[in-house]
Image (cartoon, rainbow, N blue to C red; front, side, top):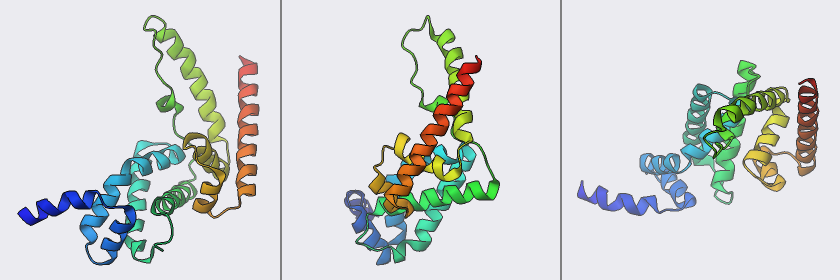
Amino acid sequence: MLDNIKQLPSRQGLSDLELVRRFKQGDRDLAFDQLVRRYQERIYWTVRRIVGSHEDADDVAQETFVTMWQKLDSFREDANFFTWLYRVSVNAALGHLRRSKMKRFVSLETLVQPFEDPDMQSDRNMLNDERISAVEQAIQALPPQQRVVFCMRYYDGLKYEEISVMLGKSTGTLKANYHHAIKKLEQALKDEFAQT
């Protein structure tokens, strides 16, 4: 027992590649546990932005880690681990969307910062709720590929080159997807706010 306690802190400081190697060498449970702990929150929020609901995000994140367990032996160690895992999570989220034909996207309410003036809070919240709803509806209308690229670029701040590696698409295709997503969102919001 004491030996395990001494070894655990040193494993927490291991790089992703060292943990992958330990997994491949048979120290599967501890290596896997460390990788999950390291990335579970980032993966959750990545898929949450794509699939929308907490329950679906939990399911897709779990599916991502099951796939990681199953395929980690074949992970090429010359690749970036998180890039690989991110791609697994996005593919799992897209698969979930295809299977469920879901048209929802994450509520932007979770992304809006609270206002600082407590006296104006309720009025601003009502106006903010209307704007959030309009933006959410516009995002829901995007095709899945544009939605994913928009999310990865806008919310995660990834460069096109990073997205290209993760999705296996050319940067030109990704730029076009993002451009079309922005144009569709602008038009949808322009139409929505012109009606009010």
